[in-house]
Image 1 (cartoon, rainbow, N blue to C red):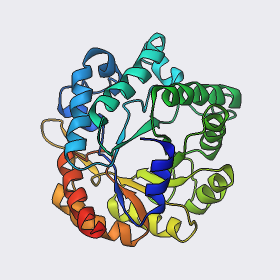
Image 2 (image 1 turned 180 degrees about the vertical axis):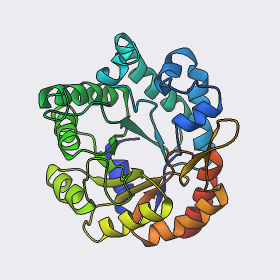
Image 3 (image 1 turned 180 degrees about the horizontal axis):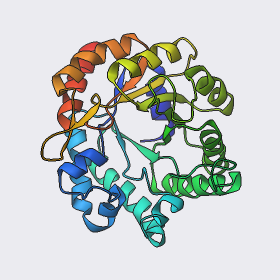
Length: 296
């Protein structure tokens, strides 16, 4: 797989299917709450590979590397920063094993750094730039097909991340924000502010992921689709979470409901669709079946 292939697929009439959640699926498979998914890249790589495989079998055209929290800054919080190189490289290598000889793209996932930038927090712009540049270079060299800056909520961090990626890589970039206050991010960023800001920085895809309810995410999708001509990445949660009597987190939207909703997402302007928190391989299978009918 190469850059020209992902760009040509994005320029075609075809809708692409992304994978589902990493963290919530791994927790169902035994990852302790509070432990980062990246810990299992080191300790239980077969479990990471199996999740990749499950998403591939469910019909995903795109699989995210298990590197969402694998920046040096995030890994330091779990005393894993010494394993920065091996975690990122192994996560991609496992994905490449699954996608070998298949038309499945690997997205190099990079989540927020987990700390605020100055003046609200301690991170300087240089700190943020360095952290994203280090990870983007490592992921690019490991063989991902494009870079994904995801679940962002702060324009300063996202813009710095995009610039950092451009400084070390020529791969296509997706930048996706999480509107977890409904139609605003945690930092109060509105959809039009997000689009206006990142469109100036040469990215290939604008995205929405995580957030709150499906209804609210679709509202943001409808707004953004009228503000940009770029392909839109749409990866919502499987509804709002709740906790059952045993302390388990439950997501309200079933695989069948996600599948039925997928056509509406495409009609609202989404080019790449999948699921975020709570979205299982079964959710992805139902989404994939719906998209396959659209692509006929």
